[in-house]
Length: 80
Image (cartoon, rainbow, N blue to C red; front, side, top):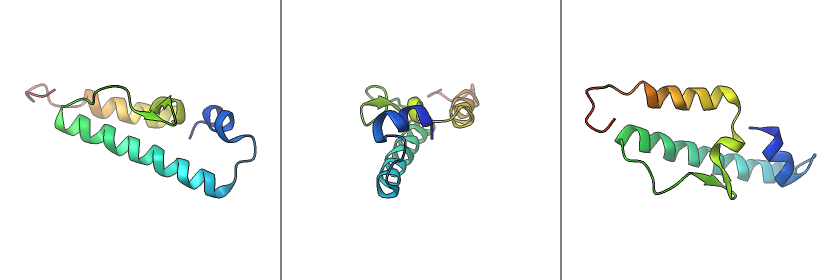
């Protein structure tokens, strides 16, 4: 999880319970994105977690993995 967004929302020393809830929210948004990519049907708008774009919460490796999954869709796929 990106420390910039994390610290802006929860402070420098967040409570473990707050981290767990935020982590679950981020994972849920990632799962939603993956469903949208798999179905080829984008959502109605950007995926937000606590009012910030999902990408604000992710490290670059995770962002790269998600983008690669989208790009790797078959060109023969009528939804892609």
